[in-house]
Image 1 (cartoon, rainbow, N blue to C red):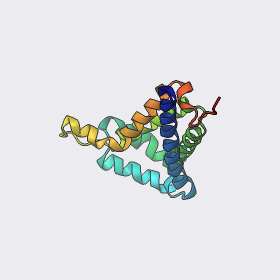
Image 2: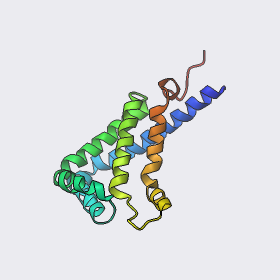
Image 3: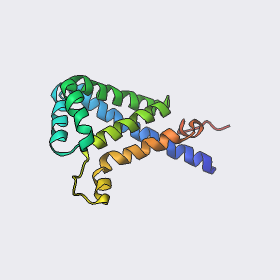
Image 4: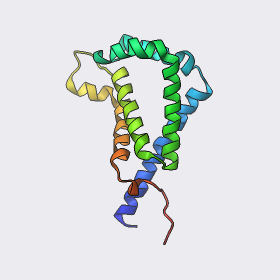
Length: 155
């Protein structure tokens, strides 16, 4: 197996693994609709009280929170579409851009370590979202010829 084939398999493994994670996230939100019908609003309220970056608070307070059911459904459906895309290898670049955007919004909404935090603490606080953001960035910038299939037929 040459280096390109190894890279392709590694990227396919990453893509499929993230797709499975997002399928689990979407399933939780779509099957048990508590997230859509109240959970999203509860999360946003907690973020506003204790975890969002100051510059994103007006967006959360004035746009997202009043329409939390709509945005809860958007998040759940987006996670399902990202999962399907990553699992099938279809529109991976678009799904990765959407996933990266989602992770950055989640990071800014919930991972603020506070105004007195040391510089390195911003990175530590962001790990739950920044790691997936890095994975989505990797999939987004990878040429499609290297990220499409896990097993290529032998020729």
